[in-house]
Image (tube, rainbow over the protein chains, first blue to last red):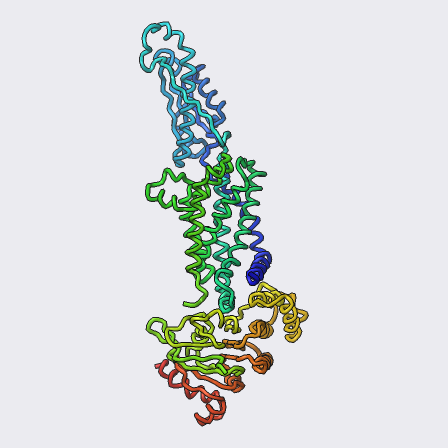
Length: 383
Length: 247
C-alpha cells in the first residue's frame, strides 16, 4: 500500500501544479452549463408575426389579441399584401405571416367556419413545427370560445336532436398538467444531462491524456522497471481523476442550483453514488484509450471520436426513443444514457434507490466490464 | 558465487527482423561492464529484455540470480535503470522525485530522508532541492537520475547511454559516480557511444548486427585486434556491417 500513497501524492502534486488543469476544473463546468443549457433548447421563445388583416372586424381583432396575449407571438409588421409578408419572411424580419381573409367574421356567423392562412419560415423545421402548433392551439381555443358565444342559436334549432357533426358538438378538451418540470423550463431537463457529459469528458479525456503523457515523457517506462504492480499503478492513475471528477460534479451541481435553480428533488447521496459508479466506466475507457495510443494527439483524437458517438447515442440531445432500432440497441449499452436517466430521475423527479435500481445495475456491470478490459489491456511493458 | 547477469542464447525477433541474435553474456558481481555497438545494433533491445520491459523470443536471462521471464518482480526489486531519455518527473522538485522513488521501492520515511539528504549534499544540489527538475541543467539532471536509480541500493544497475549530450567535466564526474557504485559492490551494466568511456570499463562486449562480435577486457580486445585503442577495435568490427548497410 505504501507505494500507492507515494504515487497518489505525486499525481496530486502534478495535477495541482498544472495551471491548465485548475482552469479546466473550474471553467469547464461553468462555461458548459451556461452555454450549452441555454443553446441546446428546442423551445421557441416568441415568434414575430407579419399580420394581414383584411377583415378588420371585432372577431379578427379578437383572434390577434388572443395570439399576442399568449406571449408566444408579437405583431412585428402589418400590411395588406401577402407579398409584403413574404418579403418579411425572406429578410427574416418576421418568423411567420398570418392572413385573415375578408368576411372572416361574416363566415363564422353564417357558416360556423372560416379560414385563416399562415406561412412559417421553416428553415428550422423543428422551430416552425413548434410555432405552428402553438398557433393551432390558440385558434382551436378561440374557435371554441366563439362557438360557445353562438351556441344559443344552434341549441334552439336542434334542441331534441343529436347535434349534427361539426356543429356545436361537444368538444373533448385535453387538459394537461406537467409534472416534475412544471414550468417546462428546458434547462432543468438539460442541466443534469450536461453534468453527465461533463463528468464523461473530465473522466475519460483527462485520464487518457495524463497516462499517455507519461508514455511520451518516458517516465512510464521508468515506473515499469520498478516493482510497482500493475494494480497499484492503475489505482494511482484512476483514483485522483475519480476524486477530481467528483469535485467537478460538485461545482456543476452548485452552478445548477445557484444559476439555474435546477431542483434537487431526490437524494444527493444517490447522485454521487451513481456518479461514482459511472466514473469507473468513464475512467476505464480513458485508460483503455491510453493503452492503444502512444501520443497525446492520438489519445485526443481517439477520445473525441469515441465521445461523439457516446454523446449522440446517449439521449442527451435527442431522445433515444426516436432513434432507429439498431441505434437504440447501442444506446442501451451506453452507460452514459443510463446515468443521464438516473440523474434526471433523481434530480427532477426525486426518484429513490428502487426507482433507479435498473440504471444502478447497468452502471455496476458497465464499470466492472470496462475496467477489467482496460486493466487486462494494460501491460507493464513485457510483451 | 552467482553471476550478476547470466544470459544464454538470448534472442528477440520483430517479425522477420532479428534485433538480438542468440547472445551470451556473463557479468560478475561488482563489475563495470561496457556494452558497445553502433546505432541499431540491438543494445537497447537487449537491455529491455534484461530489465523485463520486453520478453525474449528465445533463450534465457538471469539477473541478480533471478530469471527475468518468470521472476520479473524479484529482478525488478534488485535492479536500477536509467534510460537514454531523461525520465524523472519534470514537474516535481528534486526532493519530490527522490521521495517518490524511495516510496516506490518501499524505503522507510527515515531511510528516504537520510538518503535524500546525503544524495542532495553529494550532488551539490542543496540550494536546488526545492526547484522543479525542469529548471535544473542537463548535467545535474543526469547525475540526479543516476543517483535516483541507485537510491534503493540495487545489486545491478543498467545505464543506457547515460552521458549523451553531457559536457566532458560532467561526464568525468559521472564516471566517478559509476566507480563509487561499483566499489560498493553494485554491478554496472552501461552502454555508451564514447570510446574513451569504454576504456574505463572492466570488461566490454561489442554488438554488431544483433550478435556479440567481441568480448573481453579493454586490454585483451586491443591486443586481439592489434590496435592502440578501443575506438580502433570498434571501427574494425563495425566497418563490415556499415559497408554492407551502405551497399
